[in-house]
Amino acid sequence: MQQYLEIAPNVAEALAAGRPVVALESTIISHGMPFPQNVETALQVEAAVRAEGAEPATLAIMDGKLKIGLSEADITRLGQAGQSAIKTSRRDIPFVVASKAMGATTVAGTMILAAMAGIRVFATGGIGGVHRGAQSTFDISADLDELAQTDVAVVCAGAKSILDLGLTREYLETKGVPVVGYQTDCLPAFYTRESDFGIDYRLDEPAQIAAALKAKWAMDLKGGVVVANPIPAEHAMDKAVIDQAIATALVELEQQGIGGKASTPFLLKRVTELTGGSSLAANIALVLNNARLAAQIATAYAKG
Image (cartoon, rainbow, N blue to C red):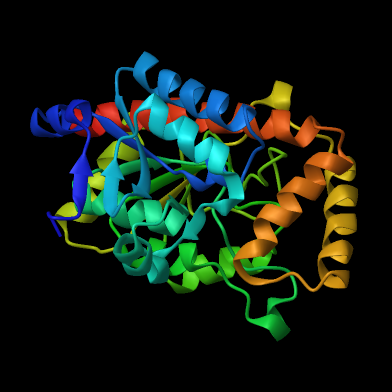
């Protein structure tokens, strides 16, 4: 494994010293936003982590290496590549590495690389989940199984609201993945602060979350934890507006026969277009919010 890992010096130094490190995914750069906003947002997210006293580590696969911590040049290169970068989950990692292609890590892919490097806390926008209509398509994100087996906490604004939140919640429960609500009693729905679904535990302080993570992994209870952090109220979208945009995008998805790993990028892009860019602004705000909380949790975790 070590022959494939390339840990940036600043990240390696922080890990060796026991300082807090926060993993950041790269599909949000390549597939989640257009250039140059994707690069600008990635750099802002890293800055937000640093402002809270932690070291950011954006993860990707480049030139046959699992890169733990990207330079600004790497981030720009990935942002310019956009969707030509391979959206990389567990099944894809060996093939992307062997071919020395450019791979942008999904939530699942980022969890795997973070665990390899010894990083316990990861910030993203929203996790993948059970897609609408999965009763017939069986379209379920690999993120959920990864959460069941990989020891990384994922700070997110819930599951992406283009998904079936109820079935996603049930799947996580079946897999034994705890869903923690940060200062909330219900599962946030990405663009909005609330949904019709609950969480397992409400914790109001980063130190409480860090203590639970310590206990879980000290007892060798395998798997991750979903830390659901609602989008800030001032950036939340009107539920009726976002629901209508998603409904329209889902119809177009079916009409165009798009499926698999292409589904989420298509839906997010169409929702952004249908909301006149409002959903992209909300997406950026919630990612920054998650990065700040992840850094606070990582700091508390490092203090022990």
